[in-house]
Length: 103
Image (cartoon, rainbow, N blue to C red):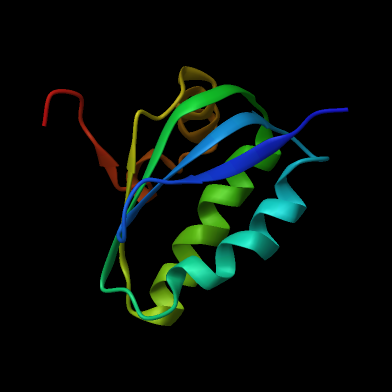
């Protein structure tokens, strides 16, 4: 059984750790909804993601939709290579607001 969890890293920042797959993503969506309320911006640090499949990419897209609906500026940091490859394969790279390393 795979697992992933959200790690608070301040008022406008949180991290994700574990494996982003079909088992772990649904609980993260439910848990994360509250994080988008009342914020102007959020950063999601994905450094702790050990593995991810298309469900992980779907999670990022869901978070983008939540951000849009709540008027939140959302950026991702430390995008795992597996998610970057999936985004490229599906022509979604341009949709993901990724903070470049060293910025």
